[in-house]
Amino acid sequence: MKIITINLPEKYLAAIQVLNDLGVYPSRSEAIRVALKNFLGNELKMFNNLEDETFKMLVRSSVNNR
Image 1 (cartoon, rainbow, N blue to C red):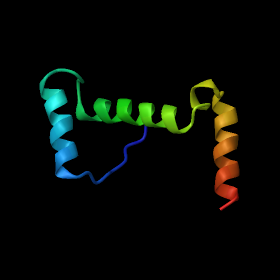
Image 2: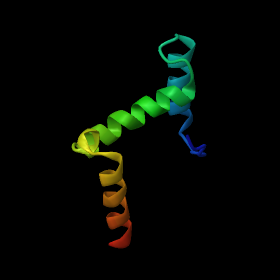
Image 3: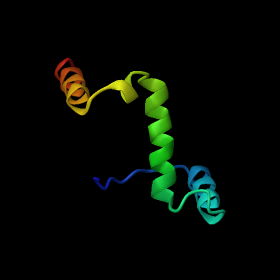
């Protein structure tokens, strides 16, 4: 896994911390990973069906077309 830095509104961070405190997620990082996985699943409907190499090709193609 890679470490990244993100800026979040205080309200988002507080909500994530509540979920963490309640034991819904073991860490804030895990809550964010789950949220991002759900986002990608919704935005890229084929995401879950792609092989790793196919997805990497799609990403490279997208970057090259900018």
